[in-house]
Length: 625
Image (cartoon, rainbow, N blue to C red):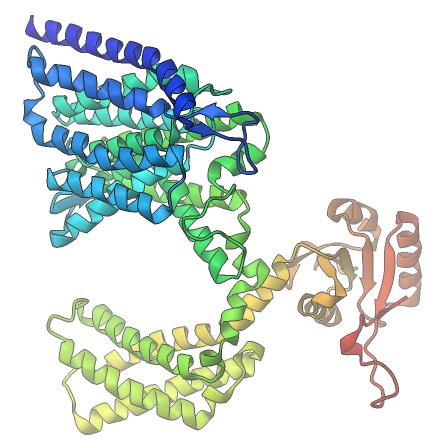
């Protein structure tokens, strides 16, 4: 009987909360008009007329009212078991609401708002809303110790701002918050935290009453006061209710339940930081822009309604993944998490953020041109770091002492002897004087030989000085690891240069006739010379055994008889004959077909001439009709 009464009262409270928000929202809109808290149209805005803010005040007021009444009445629902949580929630919201309400009327500097959010988060932590000192992931216990407090502060401030950041489309932030709070309430109930589940349900009910005014076209906005408030509430709920002690994802479960806002926040920080490093015109880490996930999804077409539905559907999928981890084994949860991360990376790639197109834009290549790297200082530091990593990995693989608990002396001796021998041999070979951005196979072979000789020299020191009693095979393992790392690092510039060339998206789509040595040479010349403005899209070759193979990362698509279909497939507007070894009759045939298809036909020639007699072929397009 008591359980039935509890359900009836809970339903009445939730229904009443929804109704109160529905009645208070027009009043909040009227207040916003009176005090000037209006969201004006602008370059970054999607609405064309002023819209009242402060809709979030109706949500906060109704949640305070509902929880306050239940807390005072005590029957049949008692919230006194979570007095500390309610105090942290209610008092922590005050500084956040204060700075956000002022910002809705008159914009405040980002650091001032951040200080207010941090004060609210610190208040919540003071009342016990924080991570446990021990959390779980895939069945493993992770001891956080003193790091629990700063990590909790980061989570509370981050999620508070995350909901403010995604509040860019009508109904998006409120819809996401409703999904998050509902799922948090369900998990809290499953974990035996009925009081926390009730709090989540009350917030969800309040958001349900606000959504009719906020769906497109929105009549009222949450405003900063509303979006940051619901962000703080969601963040607090995620740190409570036993989520961290659940099975499966455990500590990662709250991240999934608020996945879209968290992902958008992290992505914004990364792309703005990348933009600043690459010299792009960005307003800074905290500056506004129109490159958030919801802006990109909106730009794909379909309007605001379709974009919001798409993003909220993604949020529901993440919630489903989080719930599934509660019933899956730890190994299955690991595989599922990898799949989710991979899908997220693929989705971000589809959004085509230019800040992350590091290879195509050649941004990574520019770091190789800095003074420390050109002068070899940074390279020596990297080599020393690689030596230390190689020694540590060798010890871990050989004796399974990854923490160096019993092998610290061995590690120190190995690192010292290998470092001295590496610098000595590399200096003798002149490795630090080589221009690695133009490296070829001979250069890499020399670097590999230098690593092997330095390893033998280190082993000689080991045998002569008897610095430790470790087995000789440790040096063999370390040399193999160092060899792979050293050669890879020195080949990095060349590899990045090739990848950038292949990733180029501009230039005349060009076919190369002749998939042999001359065709390969021509392709590399076109890749390396952006001034030619040609993009190699495929090869033609009369040898049927080559068709279907790949040369220089480009497909060999067929013979001359397939020219029409290849042109249609690749949209090529130009063809270059790579060598004069091709019979003239075949060249004439190709030219006639090109004329019929409207494709430019050129022939590649390498010309040697006395200095001063003609322009150097390296400075012009070395092709002729």
